[in-house]
Length: 148
Image 1 (cartoon, rainbow, N blue to C red):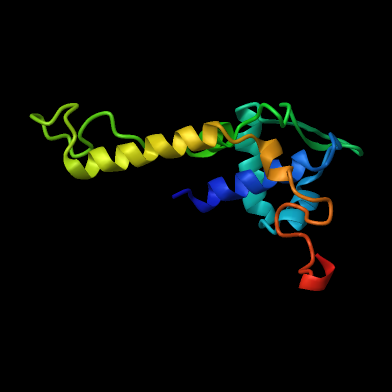
Image 2 (cartoon, rainbow, N blue to C red):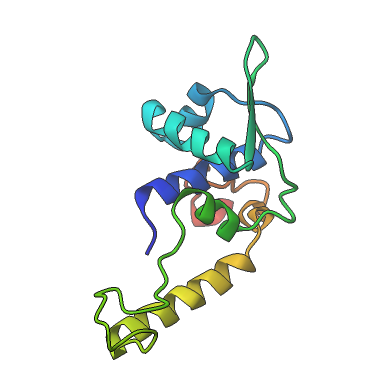
C-alpha cells in the first residue's frame, strides 16, 4: 500500500509531533523511530524540501515540524515523499484506451482515490491521540491485562 520510505517519513513526523516543538537531531529521531540514520537523513531532506520540517544547524539544532499537527494530514506527508499512484489514463499507453481505463486500472485508481481520501481526513494529531501510558510508534511497554 505504501512504501517503506513513506512509512519511515510518517514515523519521523509522528515522532517530531510528539516532541512538543523541541528540535531533534537525526540521531535522536533514528533512535526513537528505529529508522537507519543514513536512510532517515535522506527522508528528512525530502521533508525539508517540501516544507513539512525545518532544520537548524548548530549546538541546539535539529528538525522541527513546520505545521500544526491538528492540520497536517497523513496525505501531505505521503505526498511529500512518494505520492499515491493514480491512473488518469492507460499506463500501458494503448492509444485507443486514452482516459477509458480497463477494469484492472480503474479498480486500482478507485483504491488509490479511497486511500487519498482516508489519509486526507487523518491528521498527525490523530496518531498521538492515545492514552498517556501508550505512546505512538510502539515505544510503550507491553502491559499485562491487569495493568491496563
